[in-house]
Image 1 (cartoon, chains in turn red, yellow):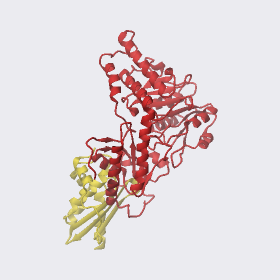
Image 2 (cartoon, each protein chain N blue to C red):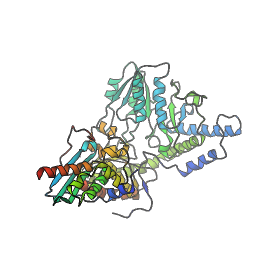
Image 3 (cartoon, one colour):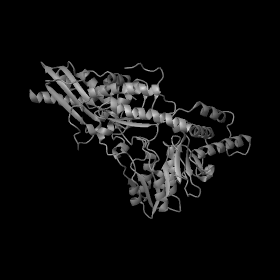
Image 4 (spheres, rainbow over the protein chains, first blue to last red):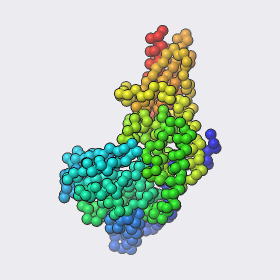
Length: 403
Length: 121
């Protein structure tokens, strides 16, 4: 094995990112001396309010929205819930049909399942083997009583970028609203809510070097949404709660930096991504890429190795100081592998052998070289232990974990 | 989430491999579930003189396989029959609750191998 670098290597930016020093610097005064409640009329309150306003403008600018259309929340999950349940439960609706896909984040699928239990109808669209929604399927599924179409901008696991502009156009042509979960996409690709026909869009600060515990929902002017939290009427009545001012300030700074640096950071990540995508199948037998080779997030690599299980890969990488993730069941605490991978048509055993590498703006060629050097050895070590590399393929039909 | 002992056995598993003319073989698990274990034993004078395994599975699956082979090696068949999943987990200083059932199949593989040995005897 090559020598282990002195610093740990972080390749799990899809999970979360480091808060940049500039962001910490921007937040710090609002934790210590500028601690006012943004609803207060005195100078403490006013300085907090002003900081929030400027953050709102920065977050809006990242997605081509107007400041007044940004609702701050606590997370991407809350934003998704507010969009989906908020649209469905508004008194102007109260019933109807919702379209989503098989590869959404659980923060979208679970609210949809909840609404289904309340009497709404939900259609989940399948995806192609590369993870794309078919526009013909959207056309075919949409009905006169469809109130909402929710399709993520880019997939959190396999990075596939959906044709949101066209999906939004189809939704609007039938009078439905269009929501997109852009939690993974924001800060990594150009987003314009007008160009992309988006009515509601979820983002989260900690996915692009802002603090955790803060997110936003873009709500197009005039869109009727029922709040989840009733109370003091903050955020235009859509999200009562004393505002998380330091978090929002950090979010705004992170949005500003992401937008400012996007041309260079996206190019750097794309270069590193393509190196991994090209090299791994060349140096490791029976290794494949999940998702599309190019129409994917600039920072996402999702690989699959036959005959081995992903948790072992992640643990071995971790022992060498490299942080990555897997869609294998064993890592998630459930007995099923990632539903996203199964939706691509992969078998359970294929899905178990997956490895997700999500790059960040601070990763470099040396770190990628180290990964590319150690990975073949780790894979071959696990394959030496595995009975599958020479044994029969899956014995289908058997139940899992029979006692 | 894993004990140091689990990580140690995962990183350096003991008794990996196959036995070409085994006296008993136990195969358990299903690749769909993410865990498959094959365990081979060689028996002489009622004592397990050699034991090897191959495992497809997570860290816990590999560590429990390794530990099971360590516990069974040198034991009499009667002693080895008493090795349970619980003994294996205990010897590894415990397993995360979610791993107790699905990734702790090695003791079952050992019992299958013993059954196979006794059937052939």
